[in-house]
Length: 366
Image 1 (tube, rainbow, N blue to C red):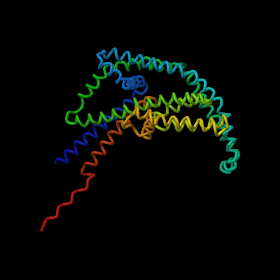
Image 2 (cartoon, one colour):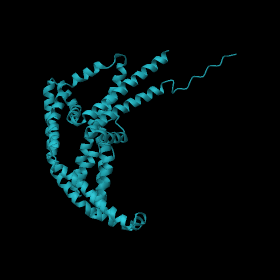
Image 3 (tube, helix red, strand yellow):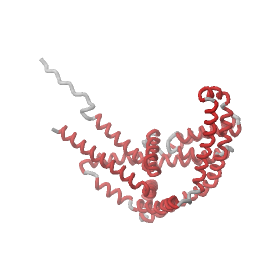
Image 4 (tube, helix red, strand yellow):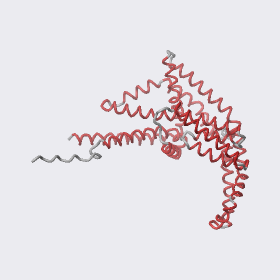
């Protein structure tokens, strides 16, 4: 009887949370066009809430603390954008213009393998592939460059940009101001019978999110500065752009540094044609990885359990494919939640009669 009741309770829990997840996905799908400033504001509030809590513990009213922290945060962001946008825009335009020439150089380097390629694709097809490669890569980079110069063009895009600029700070402020009230409201909704279990799961989800949002983002920001400055000082063409992109992609551990290393080594060889210079560029990324592994990660992440890089990559790609930027912002919290719930489900399964072998009946002594 007890086992049947337990199975019924588990089924009810599964139905309830599955229904809640379906409703969440439906809500995001229906309102994804207007959710961006609100989701972005929530992310900023989550990121900055510890600072507001700190000021609140020193008898500063929470509203004033939220306003001060939020103002300093946006001042910092605007300062960073003002510093990086001019060289970023310039190098993006230059890279778009240099792609055809770099493509020709790469194809020239591949001359020893042209015979094999011609046997496989044929003379005409190979020329067509070369032309297509040059045209499409150049167009893609030119489109990326035009995004920076044309962000204010187009009524809908401009309206969306203005809404993000206005609604995001307002949302972040009220979230930070009322964070304790919201968490208390959510705490009161937790079923009392399962309170300890749900509370433990929420703490685990928060630990993973905190490790990623506050830790990994800080690491990515630091690496972006290190790579951009070091590559620029080393004289690598487009080094500032490549360094920033490598740092941003370092949100996913190892991905940014690996892509940045490969792109930088190719550009360095095409630029100088010397293995010594290529070695200098490669050493920059190796030094960055050493700093990350021995200083940044222990300091900013500590022993907190984060999310697996492949799981983060899949979540970001899936979220972006389904819901665009909103999906990418929601991808990590959803991935953390699913990871914790799956771990809990596996532990429950391993402690259930379905997993454990049935005890053998004891033999009666004769």
